[in-house]
Image 1 (tube, rainbow, N blue to C red):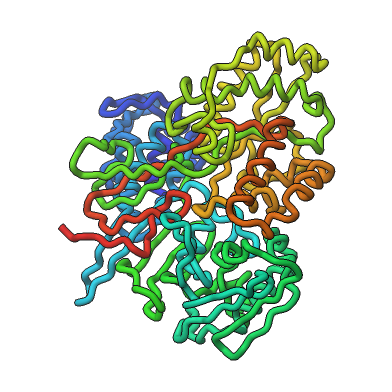
Image 2: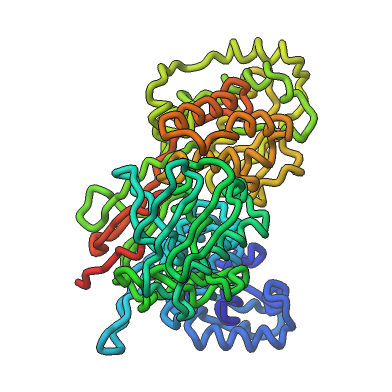
Length: 588
């Protein structure tokens, strides 16, 4: 915020001055000096600037002991909105975001400024050149925690990696088959202990070099060398042999019928062997990163992409203060996110019932009453999925007793009894001690309050703590309960086994080694089974979580996106995000 605007907002919001818009108010130079935290001499200089720029009308007092009069000519809202528009017009998006995030204003005004900013986000066509440049701007309320495929954890980061990098093959959720990507063909031995991939020729990384089998080998070696949370999946690989630049073979210690899933997942995106991607991410995908910091991620279409070049030339993803509901927004200028109406002719609502669910898990690294099964069973009744959906609604669409919606759908649901919950609580030996519940910023408070109130009805004392480090779990926190959300990949079998085996997720952060060993034993032979038997085994493993109340399933979620109807080519990528490589905008 420039100094003149800062001074005006400081004066207009100073409670001790009692200033009112369009009404002259008696003031003294000393009182203004206190409000502005400056000398009386500087006050006179500031007043002159404010009057010259039309912020105030100033009538100095005549004679000793007479008050001067100040009239505010602009509302604080108008002043800040005008300044915001000025910053955006000058291309200072970072300063505009800082204006919203740093000034001490009422929440309603902050939301109003966010709406104003949102009007200027979305699609912009720059026609300074004959060819023009199509730019899409997006806003996100959570900053990136990293874009290293070996450590990727969140859904949004996984989605972004899919726009920048490519895998050997892709999983087609509609046909439940695999399609060529960087590899144009593949085969396995009859015993599924040797897998061969034949690479596409002419694929280039963003830094210009052609991709070869050496890059594929180095990518897998990197996962193993880093002891990536994903390394468990590749533990059976004994050796890798490159047969020239475009053929690579993997030799396994035991059969693996799940092997193709492991080479279509984002953590196994192919990286160049000659670049340290922990410092600069280089891939072969439709977009390349040209800028990445805590404020913005800028993606530029890669002209050398081996597939169909994106229609968009650039995508800017700005990280702003909290945006409220957990929805994704891809909009054009003049579109007000807060007033979008799905019944009009200007916007399109995209619904994406996501695989996965909201759930609660217990911190078994902490001593306490939650180690008693009856306590966890009592909380199971308090955290009633049926009541959760019915009473809180929103994007909570169906009750869950599995991460998979079709599993939950065959359940016969009934509301639970708090009377039964109270009996279990008493039998557990609970004596009223506080139970700390950690909930995620931006989307967990409403649900946490609901659970806290339900607990009070049976004498359960739940204290709410905001999780400052969400989404990354931390087993050394003091919380007993953690509210979490797991969104699975479209390749649901990979999503489920990765949930059970990924070392960096919530489950591994809070289950003790003894419990993890039980799950490891159950799932050890997972990859040797055929598709149907793998499904049965995953159901049995999830049954262990459910029957022992190691986690409490809550509800399935619906992800929403509001899009202006001028955006075409809308295709949903994984996790409910739009595939920006397919989007194009029809100029009006």
